Image (cartoon, rainbow over the protein chains, first blue to last red):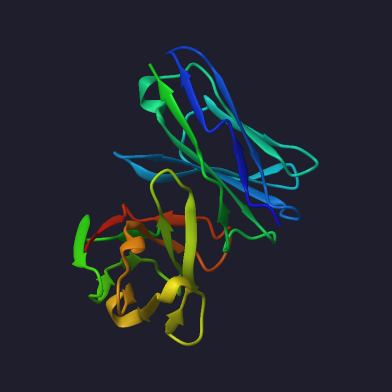
Amino acid sequence: KAGVTQTPRYLIKTRGQQVTLSCSPISGHRSVSWYQQTPGQGLQFLFEYFSETQRNKGNFPGRFSGRQFSNSRSEMNVSTLELGDSALYLCASSPRGRTDTQYFGPGTRLTVL
Amino acid sequence: AQSVTQPDIHITVSEGASLELRCNYSYGATPYLFWYVQSPGQGLQLLLKYFSGDTLVQGIKGFEAEFKRSQSSFNLRKPSVHWSDAAEYFCAVGASGGSYIPTFGRGTSLIVHP
């Protein structure tokens, strides 16, 4: 099976813009989680989707949002970008309805100038 | 709330030497515990996980970890390190009930000298 894919791999934006990142889970996986990874804060959970419903949400402002489509593909959106949003955004999918076993994609490196 | 501490930011070992990476967790009940590895520019790969049962867990790439409830620890070990093991290692704890969303430690960077 193909692994988790994320597009684009690299992205450069300026402050105030918005960005959409995409994640395609492993075929058959229905749970998709998103994480932000920065040198300062480490790995932080953003949100988790299962069957098109947001099931869990981390402690991030409302500028961060996501959705999941019927084919389990997921997108996350960040509006009004700030310099501090520069990070590696990781997507992970899980084979069951639980996130106890996650398979991570390579991430999208977002740089905000 | 659960938390994870990885006391060592960097660990340097010689190729062929043994390795132990430390992980301490805080969680009120029996946790789910994980070790992940991240190579530069890559996502995370699961090395091993502990849910219940035998407290010594075998993982991929020759790694093992031991769950010690009395010490709230889940240290990762490898008897002989290879240069390709150089990477960032993350310990994570997940709640054993509910959403299982893992909380990650800050990571330990492993440097391998030839």
